[in-house]
Length: 114
Length: 109
Image 1 (cartoon, rainbow over the protein chains, first blue to last red):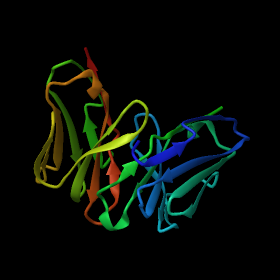
Image 2 (cartoon, chains in turn orange, blue; image 1 turned 30 degrees about the vertical axis):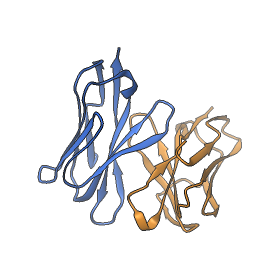
Image 3 (tube, one colour; image 1 turned 135 degrees about the horizontal axis):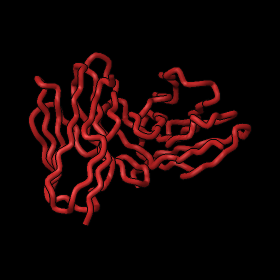
Image 4 (cartoon, rainbow over the protein chains, first blue to last red; image 1 turned 45 degrees about the vertical axis):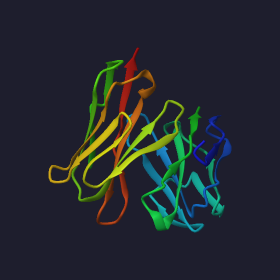
């Protein structure tokens, strides 16, 4: 365990479903990130939260909706997804003051949209 | 063209072989990061370096800033080294990470 926990590990959902991905970190970090990893492509940064405030949204479609209720928890709410959204979704956290050291990833959620 | 290119994309080798994975980049950087992703999905940091060479166990990372190139070497490779190795660079202009697409390494017993 890296200290960043993601649930569920696997998720299969229909295009009309609504689901949420959860990320929790116990490292005392103050920044959290959502990444999308598609096959044979570089990681794509989706959202960044520093001190619970969203500081970056890299042109992500509105069917992905992040939520950061506190510095330890991060959610990604999903609705009306498309099959091309199938990917590994990775959460990471870091301590802003120590950037880029201590950048820690979770194990990811493997999402399949059918 | 990606700003960070890794080669090869896939590499299969026999146990014990010396492995080299390359990373080239086209932007100004302040540091380069090598990470390892196991089949389960989790990503672990291996090295962060900005010059010269770093060694940890059987892993060696080198960087040539002038040539904008880094290599990750694995000596006496073992099947447990099978993973995807990812290079990421920290841009010196805005401290953003730019990621390579990864090199999938399989070590056969």
